[in-house]
Image (tube, rainbow, N blue to C red; front, side, top):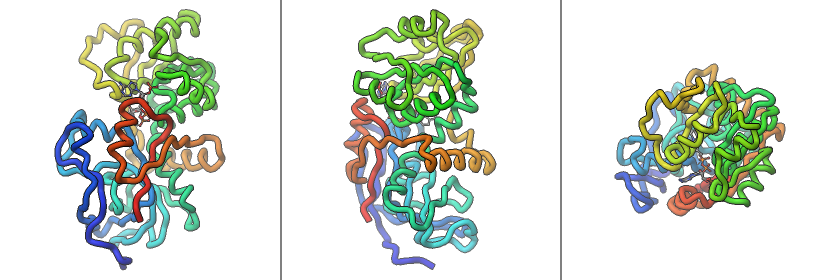
Length: 333
Ligand code: NDP
């Protein structure tokens, strides 16, 4: 059974890698679904930095490629064997091709079912929080299990992932040292629980870390900047500290010699995806997310909402470090 679903829709796609001008807002066929898939009419999609890696070709993708990895909306069609969802269900999901009016999702995919009466604000919040909160939640448990009293270096601490990390680290009783590029961003990070701050455009990160940690260094660093901060992060770690390298905002980390890992430091390069691969893992972390969001224990700070058509402008601001919190796209209905 299907409601009136058009044949074509508006999407954001790329046919080639490049700068902002390769991003096209255009008509494209609405996807057809298999027996085990359902179709979501999107209300909101969340913007993530990873889209820029696909656009630039830092990560490969088939072309043409509709961007977007998370969204929320209403189920408007379903395949014969879909068991978990009904027409009219409201959902938030992590799945590809979400910068579109319609997205197909697998019955056993990464989906959170929302209450039937969920309003637009709720849909917006879930599209905004899903991937970044799961990133923060899985990383503080599994990339480095953060303990009370730990000193943690948190880069891009006023960004989407960063503001959620600030909150979760403080909840756990760790001392967060936020690294940000401006005073305004620092103020925001502190409002979300960061205890110390380093304004990277004005201060020396390693010197300040040493000062704050009584010369010892941090127990762990969550570094999403990549290339530009690799050496700085190594030098900021305590003996036996953990380097969680999880992004390439300044470009991918260059190859390095294992001799760099002096002081028995550990390094890992985690992806959220591999912490939520099994259904058990997905259930565990997605339920934790829903519960923290509903109880108000974490707040999703939405910096700005753009219409879907303005994704190119939105990502330019994101990539030029001019944004804070999460950026969301509102999908035309
Ligand atoms: P953010 O909102 O954090 O935006 C990126 C921020 O990075 C900027 O605001 C800026 O903050 C900082 N930054 C530092 N250096 C640069 C640079 N040279 N160019 C651009 N930005 C820079 O984005 P997201 O929350 O979407 O993502 C944060 C990071 O986490 C990204 O690197 C992303 O790839 C990574 N990530 C990784 C995941 C994984 O599974 N491994 C999952 C999710 C996100 P400032 O101005 O304060 O320096």
